[in-house]
Length: 507
Image (cartoon, rainbow, N blue to C red; front, side, top):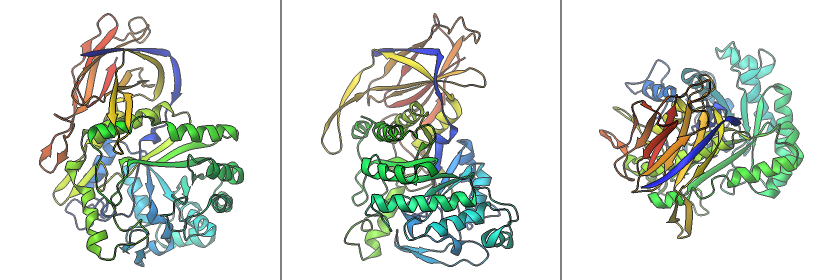
């Protein structure tokens, strides 16, 4: 069995992560909203139509912030038709079906209040205008001034919603996005939108779609950098919009080769403009698996609904979400934590159905493998990121889905401390598909510091094989809690099962 050792510097705090890196995302796509979190016909629905089982699961992982309403959906979405007692259905040109508009701003804010999270509204920068974006801010945040605050009051909401976080647009750099822009068009629109939105509410936190592309970001930061608080990055590593072909476990491990690449490039550009102290990165859409929606984001559109609507059901095949998804997601959460001096928010996409961590059905919910990873990180890791050094770690040779040979670390570790009580928590991810690894965790002051560390335990997310999954009546992936054991000579010695995500707690 391969052995490695981790030395933790409890006197060296690299940074303190924001809880918002564990944020979530939801869009008007397939069953994420209707039939997902919002389902008035469900026996699980509360008085406002929200599924209580979904709300409970979201509270368990302490969702800190929820991005809505898109995604590509937002680029033809006009919020004014989805507020108040009379709702106007519209044809969603992004996903090519009618949306009833029964879930709008008011329902979204209610959802966030029930979950206990911050709302994060993404605005229409496709077919929308700077004025429409700022009108939305008026509706949500002004006390009683102007047409839209008065409209909110007339709709039965006297108190402002207090939406603090706003994104100007979605993936407006992409040809697939309705209302796509070139870099100069985008920079100008963001500038004018940010000006109007800050005039409505100077305390609003604004983000805008960015890329790791130099030309795009240079134009954006030159024009609007002084008005922004965030730049937004997105990434899906296993894209499959037209062919629902899942990367295998080892192919998914190839995706962990350089998870910091886009963050590193964006950081460099922010530093070049001297903006790294005032603008942070919001990685506000991410998932290993891209969504399946054939015949839509294509030059030639599918004609028959059976060719572009029906296939979306393939997104909800629970057997496809295995330990590959869990291990990859944990590796990316480690990456976000390591870079939490510049990454202040991230949003897993989506939280419910499609490629999400919670699956709904008529009789309840299924918690997929990625849910247990978030449970592990949110509830058992610390907020202080500590300096550490790893010795003896193994590398593994894998082949990417595209056939490229890749060599990646077989072990991904992150050392943290919980500021409220000093508990140490080390995330240790064993990527090897079939071999266990042994790790010892030590620090110079584990036995002699004021904390008097004396015992440890290991918590693990795993299944019997790399292909383990959860489904209706089938629980193949679980989160297990080990017993507390005494340290041996000031060291915690743990065996990491194959394809497992672990947290070693020391107290």
